Image 1 (cartoon, rainbow, N blue to C red):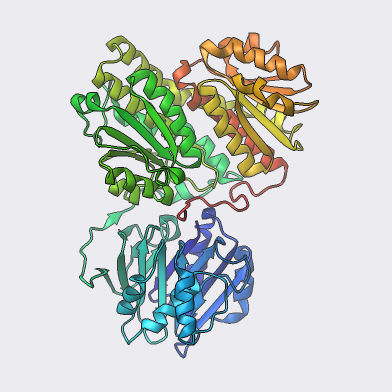
Image 2: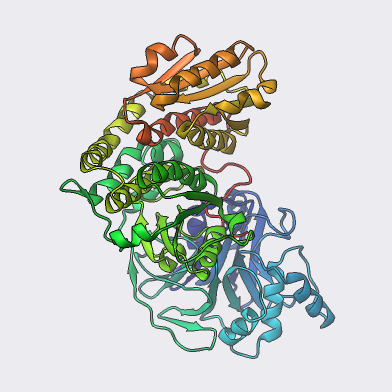
Length: 609
């Protein structure tokens, strides 16, 4: 969440900063601002509540002529969204300006200390403390002032810092919040994510935790907190900039749903060779798998729902008990983790702070860690023992779609590989599963080609106030994700329930006209789900069912609308059946006039706890 951009070079900084911030809008924000130098080397801070268009209007009369600056889009954590609490924040005499992603947990103690020294504060934010503390520590060397400040900070941060007496450099630093350095010709950059600077450079440094970088027009120097220089390999970004553009689609979300077949194909096909699953970056021997007593899957939000599907699949194929935890709960429950366990961390960005902290907790207790992420070189990827990348490409819309499908694909690959090594499935079963995986991309194409059926149904339902999702087995896991998608972008109250729990309380909420969405993709549970449909129909519910072609004739007798997906084995059905639910959420949101790609109060990359 939040976005940072910084620039130094020969060009005008302000337009570059604003354009970079536009590329980071998907991260979520409620205010924006920039800080640049004027002709007298004073820092000018221009910021405002609201969208970047409001900032652009505010910048029009400013006539800024600076070749260095920092910019920020803020998602409020401390203090309400308003002009004063927006970033950048300046020290009391305007000597220092700071942009900051993350949360400073001890900011109140630091604020009280600084106030005792005579510092006056303007905002309600934790970030202003950083600007004031850098000024307090400044003795002529900005790098040292920032380092001394970082030693007093508790929490997470990605920082960009400028100083009136250092107009030819700026300083950046990170801990638990992502930050990259872009390498240009006679110019350099910082950003919290690659799309912000991709139009300017493809060569970057990925900062590690507790590193500080001094950036000049023709020089980049990275230091640890001891002041020692750090050597770093250049990372070259090889994906196409058009991957981060809409490409003619009305919204990124629709574009990304339409990319699901290719994304799943890119995730699966390089790992399916000559009838075998080959996971080059996972070095687990058959003996390693056989020694495992338990697997922990830890994730947040959509990735957590993928993990629940993963639990069903791994337990069925590998016959090892699996526990799925929300990352935000995992580290605080003193989990029973040891060296005989495997912990799987799932994160689209690879920077999700709760998941990163859970990873470190698992490693501290001796567990091997395997991560499933979409971003090469991300913090979670770098700190894991094993890695499986989901080659989904950039996902810009806040609501995750193709990343979820590719996370499921990755989990299927892991389960098959482990089952084969543990010999809990036969060779014939192994080959059958691989053959089924090879068909998934084409099945997704079929679903997307029939999206108008879902659009038509949504056109009559978008004014609903509350919607329920019911499913059994893997369809219950599927329902959780379908419900989350709907509430994320349509703002309609939605809940997912296990079909068997209907009679234990949920049915009291069903009344005339209540919309219920029911996936029926599990071969052995179709009849039971049909009974659940009849129960809610008897109380006046309207039911949209999602089922395989082979069950449609039976399901249509009970449901009001039946959305069909191609036939696929039950175990792999969620990767195909989730797409109609994503499309349903999308059309409901569009019809309600919402900002589909940037839903209120949400951020793409959650880098605070």
